[in-house]
Image (cartoon, rainbow, N blue to C red; front, side, top):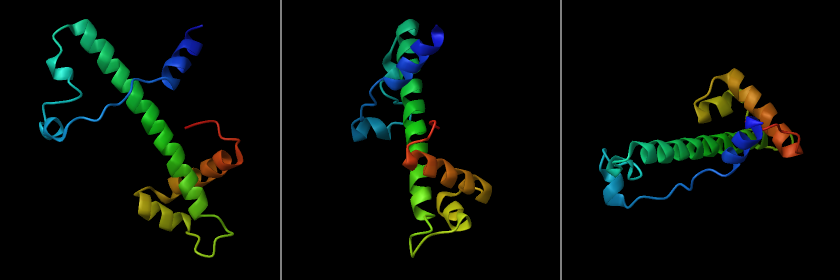
Length: 114
């Protein structure tokens, strides 16, 4: 029963709001968490941010995989090898191969998510 709740939270993460440049320049400033006095509120907001960042990272990985698959597409005259993709993305070549396969699954609509 806890699993559907977890999935729903993951699909609806806390919004990531952009901070003003002067706040972002302060290394102690992080989404206004440092100003919270209530530890319960701090835990709740920090957890929301953690879930939001995880969801964003998962989605970014999916886009990386789709881009890798497109770059490796044998129909492209300028296709890249797994080695070249790995260099561009700062991955190991074996990981690039897996990402290309994952991206192909996503582009076919059969991906299971990152």
